[in-house]
Image (tube, rainbow, N blue to C red; front, side, top):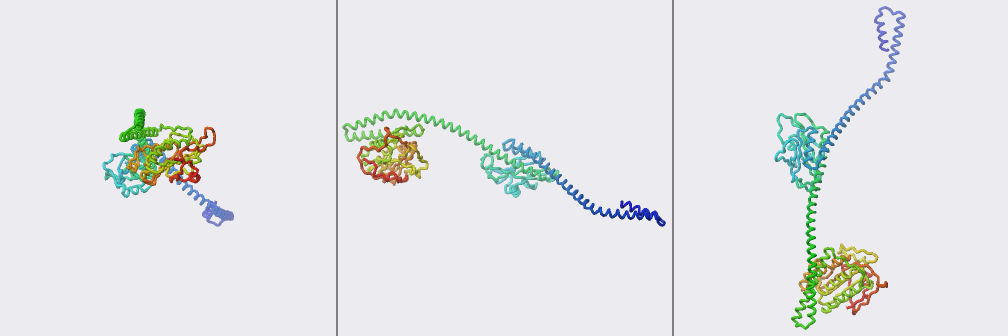
Length: 575
């Protein structure tokens, strides 16, 4: 409106050459006034319109920038989707097999097809760990002797980086074939491939390396293409390298498990054959023992009986000496046969305890009756001491318990030339049973059971500290005992130890040295039993003559303050 009014006013002035008429003057005046009014209105409107125009322009620039940013994000999303698709495809192809060579070859082929590479190669560490050897390539045969030192600067850079990096095309990792002069040098990327825990698998054709070992994957773009490595392509290479590391670790685990399975199969076959041989040997031994038991005991018993009868006749001193030698040798041979038979039954587990109730005091009385005549010949004093709290009746294997005491007591009599032998029996409290040297002995206290503690002490030849650990070994004897002319086969204490173990007990021997005697102590677990008539158990009076005998506790077991020492004046003692 302002422009039209201004134009109309100038047009009237242009085409009017004479004085203006009144009418024209009024028209021009109205036109000028209207122009001024429109001009003022326009100025007022511009004051409000210009900020709006500036705001619109600013918003337009903001929306343009947002559109460009969205375009970039969409391109990144498409790139990531494409990278993810390639990664899934490569991962599927790589993990479709667990063979190491197939995994590596598939990786190179799929990377070359996905990224349109000129070549792709893999450098693996050598067995010595001092160099990298070319193991796989994409399109070329592996050149003979292709190896590079592992301490090259470019190799150290690759090993120290978690990401794929661009390396010079002139480095030794990329220059394995000569390039044509007409070709533009290609761009080369490299990434490390972790070799996970190869030292734990011990694969025969893999290097024995630590968990920080790496291989190097080198990727070469085509020459004269002008292509450059993009960020998403390098990220794809990094992800593929990680997947290859996982696949190689799985392949190593599979190879190790297969090797372990083959080794286990071989061991099972060997164990099966060894078991068959052992069963044959056991059957042969059992047959031999059965024959020996039947064929050797009969004439041996006859020899012993006839020799004993012959000694009762009138013989010259020389003849009596020879008959006594025959009787002694026959008795020793019979003892050896019995010990071997018992030991064989203990070793193959066929021996079972004969559990029953018996008079415990009578067992000690019978043991004393057995060893008293032999001790009387050697003029040895023998004493028995029973604790007042010792039950009269018990439940257990009477025969084996008596055999243990007879064996230990017979050793005491055999190895003692002068002095005395004491046998002490008491009920051992479980609080004092734990011997610090017997790590495999765990006494268990329970109602209806008790631990019988038997100690046999002598003043014989004693045992050296070096021979104490071998006392319970089969066919072993103390050097001191052998040197002094004592006979024995070395099976008695070994059998006693097996019997005591079957009775959930423990046995040990102590000595202060050669010539100072020794003390044998064993503890066995028995069950309590009432008297046949249901009366209170009492200590039976012993038939032999009483004599005071001093008692001292074992150093290997803690002294029971409420047991033997306090009650020693009330023991029943006899000779």
